[in-house]
Length: 444
Ligand SMILES: Cc1cc2nc3c(=O)[nH]c(=O)nc-3n(C[C@H](O)[C@H](O)[C@H](O)COP(=O)(O)OP(=O)(O)OC[C@H]3O[C@@H](n4cnc5c(N)ncnc54)[C@H](O)[C@@H]3O)c2cc1C
Image 1 (tube, helix red, strand yellow):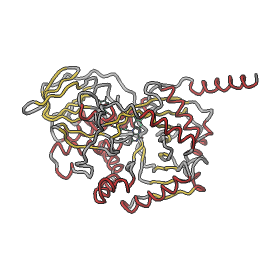
Image 2 (image 1 turned 180 degrees about the vertical axis):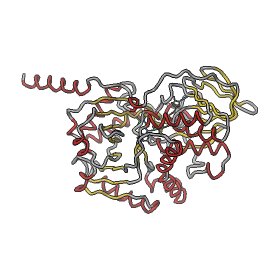
Image 3 (image 1 turned 90 degrees about the vertical axis):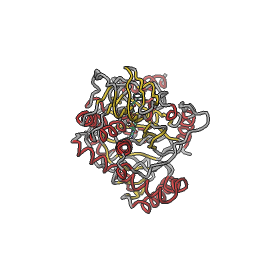
Image 4 (image 1 turned 90 degrees about the horizontal axis):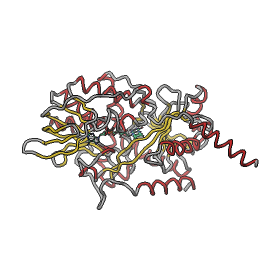
């Protein structure tokens, strides 16, 4: 009887926590998605860009500024993809393989090139935002990556040593006894403080890029899905849900949403769902205690988690792998448990928003850009695409213009692999993620 009563209370309290939760990105409160009627399609354009996320918009910006006629086709509303759904965390996104893993694949010189170039990504976005006058709450906050197990701290220390040797990056180890200077929890065994990382408001950033692209002279057409691309002698014949036209160049910027219109690319990206929750507004004292340095945060659990204060500093946003493809309530419950593992103090706090989107992994864990069968592309940011997509989109624009050095990158000419029988449905990821969740729970 006593237990039943407690159980009843517990589930009532849990229901309360999710009461009135909005199933849409928190970012859309300040940067709402507005209904658009797409403009008429031209008969011919110099360049068609497929996908109006950061990659497509940044490529279009370079091309339109150089005087090309540019049409950006977006299948959904503007910002339908990951670019208005992400955590807004910017960093060099050091390769999942680590410095030694990269060297094993690409050799010392290219690895150092990749790492050094990656360190410049945040400064690149900062300059872009300033040049375009985009007001998107950009701040160089730094990032704290926490060790969730004792052994991970030692691994992080070794990896940091290699990173510093390869790039001179500014970062320091934070031993366990100093962790509370960075984050209000005793959950972690130390960590690494990186100073170059930053945060922004993804919705405002996306809106700003759309404005810049349009004022540079490009046409941006929402609700226009590209359904087919056929090579003609001197151009491409493009079929869309709203009509056909010809394009001199075609740029594929569809990342986690890559579909059947571009089957070669579909076979090379693993679309994986990532989800986020936002808490209700917290007392200033509580958020100062939990995130005293206001950085971007992540930890070394197998099922990746990332978290940050909202850009107005009033809420905590907490993200990770989605548990369900189509149920934001299930995702919110899982993420809340992961959040309480880090911040038990948040147990009575309401969750105000839950949402998700698709990121694109590549089989070799590196982002890719280049030209395949005449189609330009950049994609496969492996979950870290705010800075990378902006940078790669810009590089792609310069490549298409033939701008030599401006288009060159250390990521050039890395073949984009696929696997036998893979057609674009990564069905095998769900059991792998479940397995990782179990290992995390067991502390293995
Ligand atoms: C929940 C979540 C959290 C994330 N957090 C972070 C983070 O904190 N930091 C970070 O660096 N990265 C993060 N990312 C990743 C980052 O958001 C992406 O890597 C980046 O936005 C990719 O930009 P994009 O322009 O390449 O693709 P998208 O923004 O996904 O845009 C691709 C667009 O292509 C359109 N499209 C697809 N097919 C067609 C077609 N046939 N015709 C027309 N249009 C088409 C889609 O509708 C979509 O809008 C996160 C992603 C998610 C989902």
